[in-house]
Image (tube, rainbow, N blue to C red; front, top):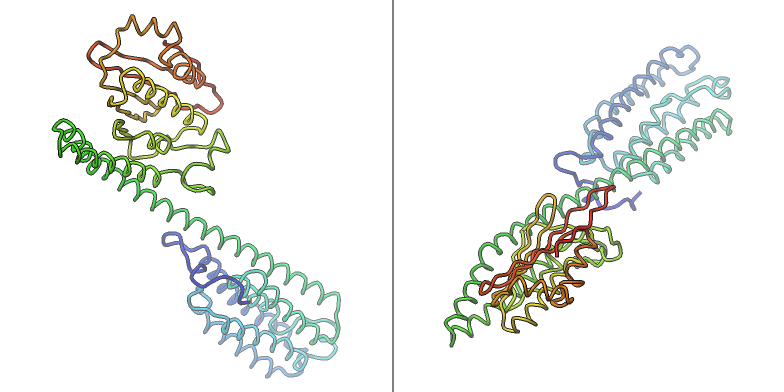
Length: 408
């Protein structure tokens, strides 16, 4: 009866509701009702008992005990193995006293014992307290007492013992499942609360600390000298802080927060922020929502690759020292990622010619990926105003495939 888990886990509740509490109330009510049944049945068959006074004394003790322990059996906090053992001992005593108080012919004939079905209340108490194993133990004790009382194993005894064991074990098994479910739900609520707190902190950091670091990096770079050195340090801290936030916000699964669990299932939800955060650097700023941007793992991976291709274009055609900005927008029907640089821009006619020639990585690395995802890729550029690549991926609709769209 001791291997049933810690008392702390058994006392765990979800909010103000406990799965076990209604079961304890039911057991307490069952004990009272079956005690009244035992007294009523004895009163009806009192005439064939040889020691009626002794039987009434026992039933009086049983009634006083049952009524006096109603509050004890009302909750797990009040009950203990000692109370359960005392209740079982009183039931066993009543079963064995039946042989002394009842007529011999009735005992041999298989007449019910003094406690009758009140014995089931004791077995159910063990079931709710400790699960199926303690319930089976209590049921066997009651069964042995019935065999000793009847001096032999009769078909009636066997039938009652089997029913008692089945009821106790079944209810004990259900209680264990309910307890595990309650603990799982409590753990899920704890994780949800912790996740919300991390997201709140991430929003605060994003709106405060990261904005300040970005400002220091930009102004320090403009001023140069010692301010430039401070700008470089601020940029490094910004990158490290963004990576830390992304790691904390990544989906939690059996393989950890990095999202590797989702990689095994292309349809598993993946937080796009965790994939784009490593792209942030001293020359690349990433602005993302404070809440998860969930997409199917394959879609998120292809979108990240398209963003990486856009950054490669910036480094190749604008220069290694070019500044780029990534903006993630999470809309109800689509996810939009914009990649903008501070380069000289590209003439639209030249952009179209380069695209037809398959250069700038647009044809396959960007547009091809978005087309396969049912999304779009648009490029906006003007001389002296830099270039912006806008990637739009529609959110998947269950049972419906996205239409391929091509704009370039």
